[in-house]
Length: 198
Image (cartoon, rainbow, N blue to C red; front, side):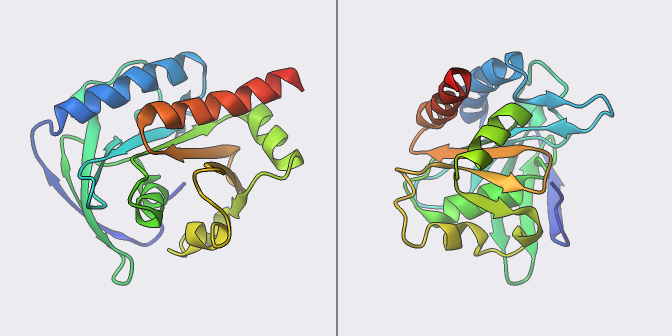
């Protein structure tokens, strides 16, 4: 997943939002151990996790770019996305690392509903196949630059009753979100349970 043609204004700082980073890390460690976050044999990393920083704003803390290969991350491998401007295609971030290149999709979800507090993106072919064969919601990768892409699929759907979808055309990516990190993680495990029973 790419940054498309957004201009990223990155200011390098010391580690930030350590409390939020540590909360993410507990879940990331479990997903890494399951192979849902990691790196392909060609070195390309996959998977990212974020949590909203301020309940009334869209700023968020997210795993850093190209960190999928590492089993553990300290706060230096996280980034803080302060704000973004879809119209001008600009994003402003700080931290010891630049954000995952999946940051744009995370931002769409935080804009979708103020109650969304966490987003997880994983990669798994078997889970992806199950979802596409069972008519889960999906977004075409080619449409991801459209800032209304997520909003469009939830126009007439309660997002919290359907809090996962797949990316069609991008390496078996699966997205889940929720009102907390634990709820988001649980949404993924509920799908995986169905896969294992199928």
